[in-house]
Structures are given as structure tokens and as C-alpha cells.
Length: 232
Image 1: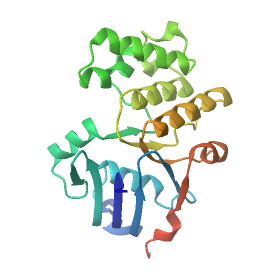
Image 2 (image 1 turned 135 degrees about the vertical axis):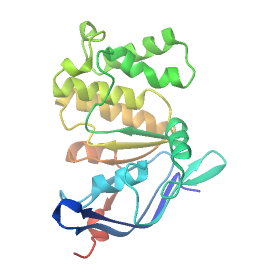
Image 3 (image 1 turned 180 degrees about the vertical axis):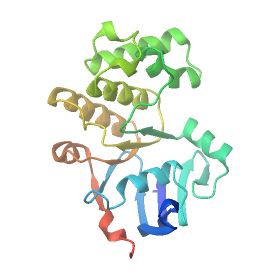
Image 4 (image 1 turned 90 degrees about the vertical axis):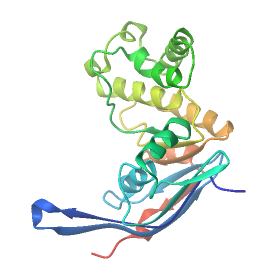
């Protein structure tokens, strides 16, 4: 079976220009795969390079070396060398991302924030808003908050909006960066259910899950990022 994501030879070093060009190696020769219908965790201690690898796969960080091949229909795209417009198209159709922090346009209500990916995909605005409301309700966000901008919410409420926005549209490959970090037990359980539903739909997931219970519940494999430790 062809993987949705195949990374090989990935290396990344940060250059600290405010520190006279000091070089901070992060990872070297990283290699891993993600297949449809499985959830793969990036494991290892803080500072091992987990978030950097996730950002390289999404294209937020450029690589120093290596390839990140993502299956996009009948085509395979190397994120490491893709032109910016091709990368944007890949994100619009194939790669979803649930980050730790919600970044949205100010003064836009939570339901519209969540509905936006569906509208971009071509759904009617009323249908998109209805589906967004259903997902927010499932994540226990009170309806009285749906019309309010998420910037006014607590950290846990913002994270639930972030999760809903990241999960509402179908993307074959989903990246998740600590999706349950600010959630209580009840909402963590809902997120576990949503991840399992994505897996059953054939979505491949690569994520960082510091919550051991969540990781054990949803992850099929753990990649030890310390195996890619770069030499200082």
C-alpha cells in the first residue's frame, strides 16, 4: 500500500542570527511514513524536534535536506521543494492542520470560523454553518458563544474551536499538535471519538500527543524522534 506521507532524509538546523550566526541542529536524517486510516504519534522529550518535524511536513519550516512526499490524488508532491502556490493547493485539498493556537480574523464569530473550510470547499454557507454548529455542540461549546469571536474565549474554548475548524472538512492527511492540551476529561473523550471517526474514514494522522491516555487510545504507532537527533 502506498503511504499518504513518506518522509526521508529530513534534516533541519536553525541559524540564530541574533547570536552571531550560531547554529542549532534540530533533526538529521529523519524518515517515517503514514498510511491511510492510521494515527502515528511523534514521541520524545520536549526539544527533540517533534513540532519542527510537524511544521516541515506542513511546509511552515523549510528543510535543509530530504524529501516530504505527500500523495495528492494521482500525483505525489514533495513539500520540501514545492512552489508556494502548489503548497497552498495541497493544504486546500489534502493536508489539514490542528495547531496548538487559534489564529483567526478578529471579530468573526466562532461558528463562521469553523464553517469557513467547508465554504472554501464549495458548501452552501447555511449548510456549512449548520454543520459547524453541530460540531461545536458535540465539543460542548455553549450555543450562546457561537456568534462571538473566539479571541474572547478561554484557552480550552479556543482549542475546541480550533479542533472543530481543523476537523470539519475532509482532508486525507491530518496533522495535529497537542490537540487535547487544554481540555478536560469529557472533551478529551470527544476528541478521541472524532479522531477515531477520521481514521475509519481513511484519514492518515500524524500528531504530537503528550497526553498518554489520548495517545494510547488513538495512536497505532509511535515514532521516537530521538532516533533523529542531530549532532550539536
